[in-house]
Amino acid sequence: MTLDDIRRGERVFIDSTIFIYHFTGVSDECRAFLERCEIGEIKGVSSVVVLAEVAHRLMMIEAVADKLVSCGNVAKKLRGKPQVVKRLQVCRQQVERIPLMGIEVTPFDMRVLLFSMELQENYGLLVNDALIAATAIVTGVETIATADSDFKRVKELHCLSPTDIDVSS
Image (cartoon, rainbow, N blue to C red; front, side):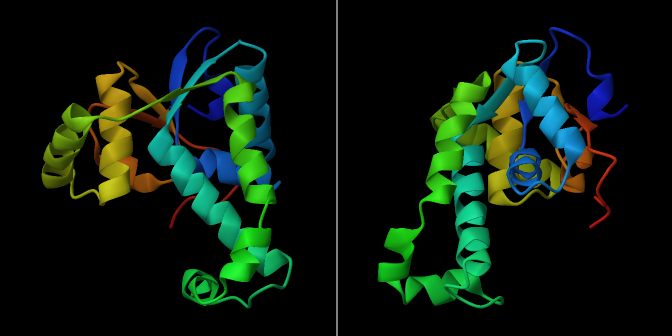
């Protein structure tokens, strides 16, 4: 099943990769999927953890695209250039658009954090991925739209990925 196969009215948790591929113009499938969320055909759900991840990655992309820093350990380079970080605005504008796209953004609390540690232990997930999986499961969403194959290890989630990009890594 692909992102295009999601049924009308279905609740789908959205991982950062879907937003990144949409905002960077890499995937028409991600764009079309998010448009379906925006018109209310699909009930998109995400989390503040996902939005923080999107903000971070878009900041790195924006800094390199604008030639403010070179590729390679971009975060480290930006840490030493707070005046450059202050000028990065596109990442913020794009993250602020997410709730306006019909996406429900859920917070996380101690219960989600503790459950994420169980998922980390059971499935070998890194911290953010465990938090994302835990948030989806706790909010009752069984399907996750993602290009991150690590979520396929989580038996409680059904993963759907865009097919117009290489998600093998």
